[in-house]
Length: 512
Length: 75
Figure (tube, rainbow over the protein chains, first blue to last red):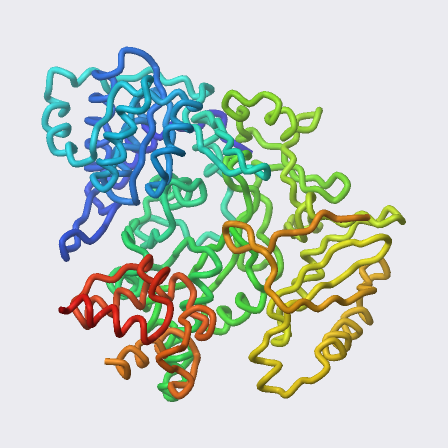
């Protein structure tokens, strides 16, 4: 259950300064040297930015913040969130054309940006008539001086906060490709981290976390920043993706939020180490790569192969996943070491989950207020009785574990009325080396599996009849499948499938 | 330099050194993912003192291409 009063980001910063004081909160490498900022320092610096904003803007406005993860990025985000204005993060790689479009749709009047974005910021300033002020993170030093607690502007950081008002708009790519601005109140943004934890050994004072994912994403901002601020962790910023190997050794984290690709890639390094150094134990090899303290990898954002979870368990590392979406405030389920490898975690106590025709639906006080200026899309996202429609297919076990098996929009509905998730069938082929790519879909009244075989495997194993080989695999899977899930036709293609932007296979329209 | 690049690559993906040729494609043949490429760029920067980013691998697609890129950068 949510506490009766949910703190704001400003209150969390004050509480962090009071409870953890001069202890290090943020750590990062700059010009080859490690720099540290305490809980008090980030609170004080954020207040200076808050005062600057309130001095510059004469009313409540929407403020875009653009930058890679850095101490200044966090200070400027916190400054906006403490000022009673609306924080709108965008990724640093955004183009001027896309930013200009989104700035207009989001009514952005102020832009705070990192130095690398300076040229684009100047262009946007000229191109967007509603954009009245821009300010670079490089002016931070000047801002801290001018707007300090002893300056004439000191009282500007006294803000009457309305936690039910929109505090943040986060643009997410919708299924139609049109980006939608998810509006969250302060109560939703912070409320989502106020759940009762299942694993009591992760989020404790002084525990070292390495932050490797972009902070402009909800999963990272909510977890690596807001939650770690509340719990008093030490957050080490990885900076450039390429520095991860060095920073793992340098900072020796206990916990890291990741996407599955990171776990997969670093496991490859561990396996190579073990092969080259047969005397090493698996744990010793893992510590060579991840540092000696590593215990938790929290995965999100994409499907996590249970075999990978199993391999990490053998290294003494809990690789577990959570599940959520920005529309519910971030989390729906979180990692727990006792859950099944295929589970996406245990549902948190501030969310209720039900399934309607197989679709996972969520009810929570931290749900979004709606999509900004998109009433139709907002209406489509909620059921009539107020549950958020996730668009994911899955189920919940008696002990509150959540399992996701596919997407509603990909669902094959057979003439018998049975629903079949193609992703669940496709995953079964992931362990067969002959299968490079597979797509399962409905055609007429049957389920078809279309394969793009792995040419190297076929050559290396002198396979002449590819279709017969694939048929053997399909027969073995059909032998244990539910009758509605039987694959009745195989198709083999000689070119890879067409992909969508992020490398996912573009699905056919289901013809059933 | 080719041998050293080969060694670095073999530190990221499980391939036999003999399988790595100048024509080997980094992603399609050797299976390097975007994080592997990012970490490889860091190792190359440290070892050869040239600027190389993960984006460089959008145009430099083979092991031989990396060697050529480094040689050009060092000129």
